[in-house]
Amino acid sequence: QPQMKCGTGEDYCLARREMQMLTALLLAAFALSCSAFSGCNTHVSPIAVQQVPLCSFPRRPRALTVGLRMMTDFACDGLPDSATLPSLVVFDLDATLWEPELYQLRHLPGYKTASGAGPRAGEDVTLYQGAQEALMEVATAERWANTKLAVASRTNKGPWAKSLMKQFRVAGLLLDDLIPFQEIYSSSKTKHFQALHEQTGIAYEDMVFFDDARDGKWGNCEPVARMGVMSAHCPNGLTSEVWRNAIEEFAAAKAAGGGKRMGKVVDAPGSGGVGGAQAATVSSWKEDKGYGFVRLNSDKSEVFFHRSALLPNTPLARGAKVLVTVTAG
Image 1 (cartoon, one colour):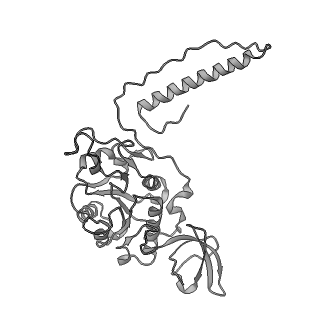
Image 2 (cartoon, one colour):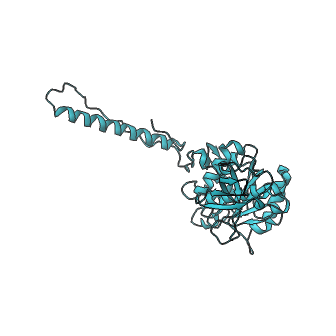
Image 3 (cartoon, rainbow, N blue to C red):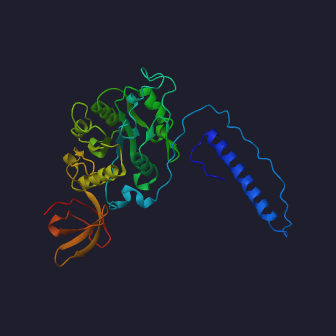
């Protein structure tokens, strides 16, 4: 039986009909091959393929279900065991978790008031692959068990956004269930975060935020960073590279003492912003000489380090997972 990735009745009927047609074709081919041999006594009776109708389920959006990836692909697996993860991860919606932005769907009925059936998940609006992977990681990896999820969106299409939250699925869960804290209304992101802080009791320095708008009149990352929240810029939506970089930067800032180090904007890798922490593995350490090498997880290059650059209690055994900040020199 085929394994279904989407739970609609239409999907089931389509799969059933395809399976029946495939069975008929295989039996017919077997019968023809037997007729080519005079000694073949096998008789295959003609069969009628039942035409299963495309069920009369009402048309509805297909819920996207993300397949499980290898655990070693998770961002948290590249961090030291002692690394600190955020207590609250907050996502913007438009152009961060999904595309297109809801204001662009002017062709849909009810656009002005965001009423009617609204956009369909997987058809009118799709989740970014990196967003799916990040949500899958937090939903399934044990190291994220104590982390909460939230969304903060300034969209004026709130009813549509909330409807989509009830359509998309990740790890078998609707986004509406996976992400219980939702600030979706036209306002400022600072007000969203004030509300999230009050609801969860989580300090700003223990949060991380992902948003496509960095600065300027409509920027979100900079004003939220000034509140003490580490804010990751997603200029091309949430990608796996942005996700990993932000989590590694968060862990490195916490290892260095946290506090004011947390309130900053983390630019996307390759965007020209200030570089941050990277996950690496200790490849060698010479205790008598006070230096060693680490291999960066990103490109497998070897980087030299000296004892003077080490933070207290840094593991130095070969194969130890560490976070490093690479500088020229």
